[in-house]
Image (cartoon, rainbow, N blue to C red; front, side):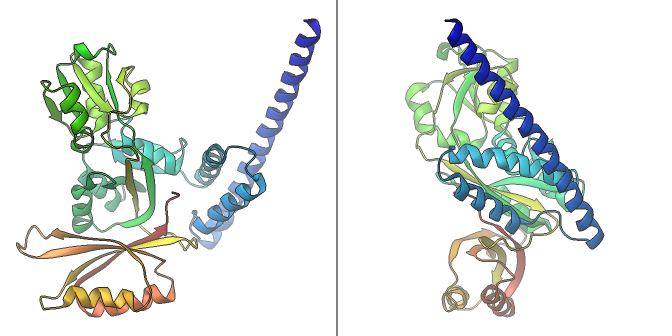
Length: 360
């Protein structure tokens, strides 16, 4: 027994020594990042270099050779890299509040926990905060793999002049939560419209007589549940801790593999990373074959369109704008050529940004 305790003590001492080395190396890395920031300030270069960050992750995963869990390794180094980048310049991020919404989670996934997060009441407010320079970045949901597009985000691009800086794919798992953790206490279920739709069948089967209330965000719903023992919320895992709630049922979404795509808004898009997307907002001329002609421009150049969606122009009944996502960066020769031709043949054209593809 004494020998076992001694062995355990030796191993723990070794772990403590390794942790001390980790801390020293983290401090050294932070110091290097600050030096890089000073050089970039003198040359007025962008603080964020997506190509460099992608190269770091690829090298680390290759050197790891699968020994350390890859998803955890990526998460750890994303936090380290983001913290070091933020040491060069503090970052404010607006998101659909209050605290602990899925937008908040997506922001943390992109920027780490070191950024300053500012909750706002509506998606429209996020666009305005970024456009007016009150925050450096905003993060908005744009589409869900089950329920489709978030139209208020698409409309925001039609109203405000902002650029897409990044995209984030967030796996969504919905939890039914309340104060007691008991299903029988629930007299009302509250959440954002998208989660309510994504859990429609589960709610119909398990709580058929309980009314539902559509609110601005899952965070608002969680706060309602924290204030009223008869209210349950469909909310994120972060909301459980934030609002001290109990899980009634985990995973109440109707379909597994539920993913929401978020876009990061800013004043300018980053440089090419080598694995990018480009987004456009265009209006077509009112003539036969206009859509076919637009698609032909991309097809003839081998450009892969990953998304095309129309939205009505509210001030012009019967007229529409098209959102286009394609693989590649605006600095790529083929993308530049195609966009120049498109601009000449469209009634409206706006480049929304080029940005690194999200990790799948």
